[in-house]
Image (tube, rainbow, N blue to C red; front, side):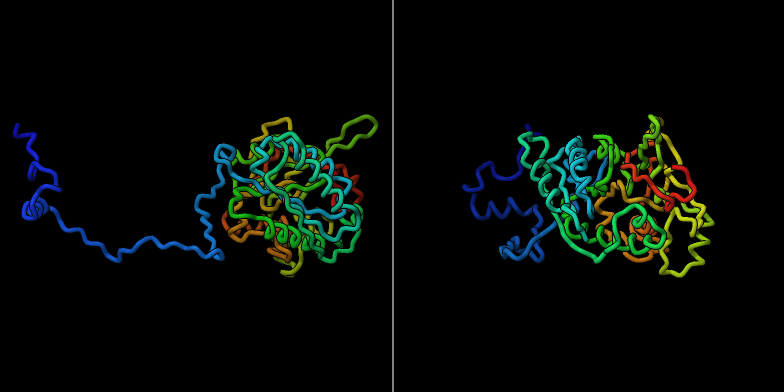
Length: 355
């Protein structure tokens, strides 16, 4: 029975004497508490606490219930809004994890009224799978007065001021809408014609800091479907481009795709095919803004859209340059195609390149 022997008196601690109690504890070390205090309780309603440590951007975004912020800048966009919301409503990423935010600037048409009407339509739809978690409309004018015609928007002379104004608009929208619980930011232009319903899950599965698709368009001529290449702002840098930038003043914005600036860069628009492996990845040095998926912490770290010349680039191309300078990945999917509206390009940013 010796192995069942218990140290100390075989009585309840409430029944032993003071001497027996002292003997019982003689073999224990005395605990010492340094700077001991009770938990501090904060009751002031003007003080808030935000813990960003649990906010992650992972490839298991749906399983982890990661929140997505979809951002769209708008200007004279009333013609495209209905189609834009038709596509948003079809997204298979859980809508209760998605917030929408729009910035309307320098608009002369009914963009705000039509936007509000469409938002009312999708947010009050009786189908519970359609309404989004929240919606925000931001209005801010920047004094842009050039018309939205293709010839003027894509003219060489207007590219520097236009890209700077667009960078400013994106930054205002981002600063007004990004919340602490957002894990992903999805920049999506209003004039997308078609895209896969699973695009968010498809992109998030790559688990990249910044990811863009290829952007093409359909043009129908004489009963033929011509697959045109649209976005020449997603490119890989070249020695010729670096030499050209080094020869320009630091405040000059390189407008990609114009004969005035021959950069010799490799355009993702001229690579790939939607019939091939859609998950193939390539590294990029510049990106277009039609469709961008970004880990929210990239923006939180200070990488935004330069409204000035950053390494002789502005807006989305400057964003890519800044992200790479900060050590983030900038990746393109040459075989994953998002279809843009056919702008019926005039001689301008296409130059002599075939559509």
